[in-house]
Length: 116
Image (cartoon, rainbow, N blue to C red; front, side):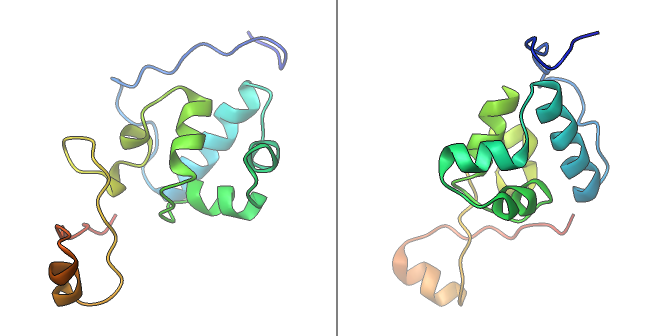
């Protein structure tokens, strides 16, 4: 058993994700952070974000800046932790606000994100 002041063992990213929905993932992230003596609030303040931004990202709201910070704290790839925001190659799926025509004009590849 590890206490708050010892380093938690690394998470094996090759394992199947231990959550079934975004709410479970948010709880799992909070638990893993607490095992490492961290919290959403501490991590957010350290990186200059509001705690609610981290909480919302953990719950599935896409945030390309915060996802890598949370994943790095847990020592897992962002594509594993937030798989719905990445393609099979581990590249971030571009979120396009507006029409596909706008995306095409900007030269972005558009990929539909499947509902979780």
